[in-house]
Image (cartoon, rainbow, N blue to C red):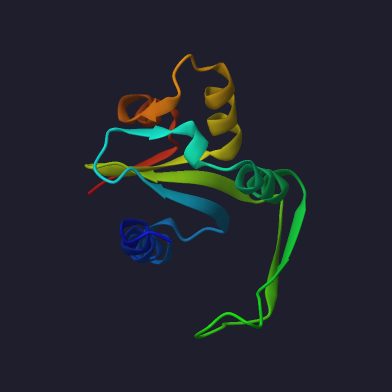
Length: 127
């Protein structure tokens, strides 16, 4: 994970614990100061996993080989909310995975602008 994205992960985890307080799966992306995120930054396997969380049953085993603290062995998410979370320079937003996929597939652009992300987002937090 890149340094900017790692810092955002800490910021976003605090938001989830203190404000959002609901079960969900997320894929975090950071624009690194730009006002757009290339759609290609969100990989197909990430989208597939989020769609399974959203529409099916996703079970995951946390690797025993990971360094550091491991809270438990694994988890299962079924029919839960799933988001692409994007950190733009002045805000972050949570876009449902299905909404992101539709935008990616229908857009004439190769990237998601911050203004369009605001339109698609179900939750936006100013930073």
